[in-house]
Image 1 (cartoon, rainbow, N blue to C red):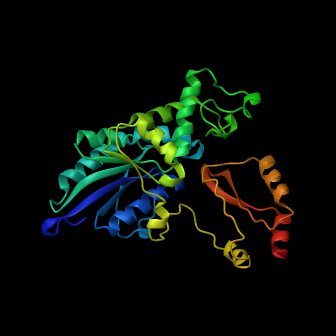
Image 2: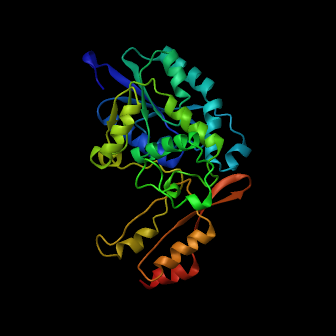
Image 3: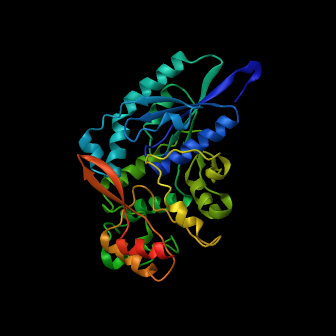
Amino acid sequence: MLKEGGRSSRVVLVPLPYQGHKTPMFQLGTILHSKGFSITVVYTQFNSPDPSNNPEFKFQAIPDGLSDHDNSTGNFVDIIALLNVKCEAPFQECLAQMVKQQDPDDEIVCVIYDEMMFFSESAVNQLKLKSIILPTTSAATCISRLALLQLKEEGYLPLQDPMFQEPVPRLHPYRFKDLPISQLGITENYLQLIIKSYNARTSSAVIWNTVDCLEQSLLAQIQQQYQVPIFPIGPLHKLSPATSSSLLMEDTNCITWLDRQAPNSVIYVSLGSVASMDKKDLHEVWRIASNHSYGWSGLARSMVQKRLCYCLRVSKKLLEELAAL
C-alpha cells in the first residue's frame, strides 16, 4: 500500500505447502497486491510454487531439511511437524536478512502465516514485527479439531467402532465419524499439532477464509477462545482474480464433458489433495451413482522412485458410460 511520499508497504506470506492451504494464501496475496501492497512469499523446497504464475510477487526459498524419505511417506501430519522444527531457524535468518536489507520506502509491515506454519511466530516476535494468522479451513473445522482435544481429556479417545454413529457431546449435529480424523487415526502427533497451532496466538489478528453469515455462531465460539480479533473475509476466490497456483499439471479434458451438460446440472465436490479413499469406498461411491449422469475423478497416491506422485484412476466401465452421455 502506498504511503505518503510514494513509499509502499510489504507483506510477507508464509503458506503451508499443500494445495488447499497455498491457494487461499496466494489469493489473499493477490488481493493485497491489488490494494498497493508489495508481496514476498517465503516458501519451502517441499511442494515449492512456480514463481512464473505470480510474477507480481517476490519469492524467497528457505531450506526445509526434509529428506527424500520424509517427502515420500505421504504422512502430512508428520511432514507438517517436521517443517515446524526444521524451518524455524532458516526462516528467522531469512526474515532477519529481509528486515536488514529492506528499503526504507518498502518496509515489512506484516507477516501473514498459515496457522500450521506456527514456527513463524517466534521469528516475528523477536524482530518485533506484526503478524496475522490465516486458517485456510472453515470455522467448523476449527471447532471440531478443538473438540478432539476436549474428548481426549474426557477419555473418549481412542474412538471405538461402536461410537462412530453416536452424537458428539456439546457438538450437535456432529457424530464421532464426522470429526476431522485422518486415515492414520487420531495419533498423538496429530493432537500435538492441533495444540501447537492453536496455542500460537500472539498475532495481531486472525483472518478466516469464510463468511460470517454461514458460520456466525461458530465464529462467535472461536472469538471467545482467542485474545485477538477475528475477521471472516472470505470467500477469497470471489475477491481475487483467477490465477493458477496448482502444484500439479492441470488436466482440462473434463471440460469437453462439462460443456455437454445442462446449465446448473453439475455439482463439483473436492475432497482435497491429501484426502484418500480406499478401493472399497471408491467402488461404493461409483455404484451409488452408476444410474445417474455422474463423473468423478479419484486422487490416488503411489510411490514411484521414492517420490509421491498422483494419478487419475477412472474405471473402464465408467468411461464407457460417460462417453455415451
